[in-house]
Amino acid sequence: MVSYIYQNAVGVKLPHNAAQIASLARPVSNSQMQVGDLVFFNTMNRSFSHMGIYIGDNKFVHAPRTNSAIRVDRLDNSYFAARYEGARTLFA
Image (tube, rainbow, N blue to C red):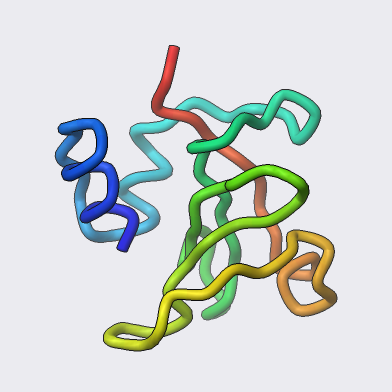
């Protein structure tokens, strides 16, 4: 989902793997997060196994599974808060 959105919205081609995308992006603190930054989670017992796009107000959009409905969740949701690995940006 993230690769598709970035390709179509800003013309940036990204790998389809969350860990590879994380390696391309620059870490940002939670207080510096902006809409469009990427948020990463450890959901499969490995770093950067899931990601979403920050949309502001402590919320992010993501696809929970391949071919599943896209949804909006909160970063302070107990499931995601426990697995949160941080935010990164591809912007300057």
